[in-house]
Image (cartoon, rainbow, N blue to C red):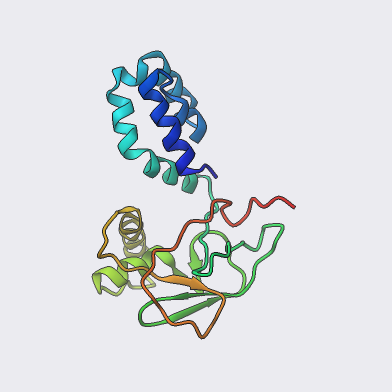
Length: 183
């Protein structure tokens, strides 16, 4: 998993002639070479990246497969396939608690998708769990809510304490994707 802060710092180097390093870092080597060869698309690409590189990094990390979050206590939620193994975690909304014993690494806790729940919490619309098209649309919109900087958005939280009360705090992504731990 690539760190957003490092990607942002590498992007800033484009302002002094080292354009494209951010793209090589997040895994877009060809784009990085193009940026380097054209001085960040003559500066326009570098300016665009300064605004969007954090989002680009998050999207690239998600494309890698596994992803995870941290609990409100700051603990990385490891998935069942990692060297750490899974542990019991609770996803809390403002109305309900979902318990997961063996997180699989794809955003589903207690049969409830985090991004679908985010969508439901912010739109007050219930998604039909038997309608895959509706689920896919809600998941995409919930992901956009998560990626946005909307200060009015509300989010589920994660905790290991089943007695914890919900508070609105956007969960941090786990930089190790819940999997890539060093033993």
